[in-house]
Length: 585
Image (cartoon, rainbow, N blue to C red; front, side, top):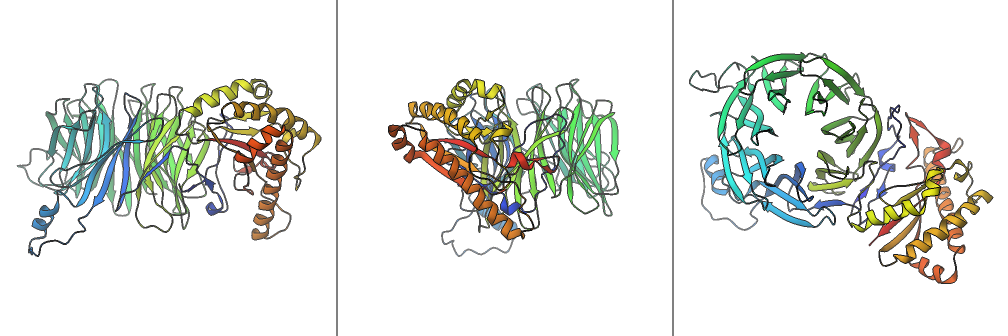
């Protein structure tokens, strides 16, 4: 398992959080084998682009892999490159890939590549009412492909469609009638004999195709201007019309256009966003109040990508227009809405040398509640997210190992507080029992227990003083009672308990020390805090418990890598702390 980093914040509806950190390289957290972070390695580049939860609660994601024949080929020569590509398209190049994981253990239940003619990449997935899948993608000969699969990923039908020119799919949208709407772009034909040619005069035009649930093409239409227009995403409104988001490129500008069309493809209204800065739409969703939310990337004055969110109604009236300003370039590729109106977004954040996967939690007013980053010191990204039945989220994207040049498929499950879900279903039972066991301490706000089985001491009397690591009398009294309850409980379930971690942390300051000295001195201090706490917990126990604890106790120091920050201001008192985490087999 690779190295991950994440930063957690207490929730407040008034928070506006900037995770501005001096060095992403210093923020690392070892992901445990029990964490639901599944990396699927293939011989060549691969990634996942879309993810859904099945009706049996398992998780399915689609994307593409690269596959090449490494055996010696025949000496037949080709003068036409397209004939050569056709000769290998069943076995080499990009292949559609479907991955299904067990929702509890993370075990791979299905790992299926397409054997279709004209190798292709999968772009989008959506569920059918019968627990199967619609999958949309692109083919080698620049056509768009729509597959309908059953629950075991067996092919029900395949539709290849598009104009005679270059076509590219961006998304497929599940419709209320069981059909789908394909959204993408197509190069302009400039031919009156092309029945799809409507208004496009430029390099590319918006391309929409609607299918019934049986795979019958109901209509295909193109929309555009004299410039370069590309369809990005769409969503169905409650009245059966569609909101389509697209881009128009000309000179050095890229505008965003919202278009409402009727169920038969007729245009109802247009709304343009013309900015001096480049903006790129990423995802549009319909909210539970029947309004819409659009996620965009906008370049600021420093030529840095920033997140922008626009909420609007069916009549194109803007309700909210929010920008999330961050130190590092940040982009949301996908967004989803919780039942209470909260929003989760996933994408990436990057500095000059590293790109990491990004998760952002927002409230219904689009105020940022917390944010977490995941990845190694290479290139990692989340492309898609889905909210699961239990309010956890599943993210799909790219993971790249350190010193590797090849991307891998990656699926992660997180709790709503952005902590890892543990793969074993035992974790939820242990969590519920811990919450019940420590109900008094939780109610009095002495501790906080997270679903990843980490325990935080949040009473201000339990924090450490500046440069201090020796336990105070108050800390010892608390630990005496707390640890005996914990070790007694864990001993009952010792067959499930692999490790009890005691982690020490510091705030970021250290007088006038240099950057290097400040980090090293805080690292030593955090380890001392961890050791003093571990040592006291150990000596509080009876001899039999001590023997068992020698098998599971582990101390770690994190320096200031997980300092507590609110609205870009470090809370130094809360950063000087220890926490515990239970790791299960």
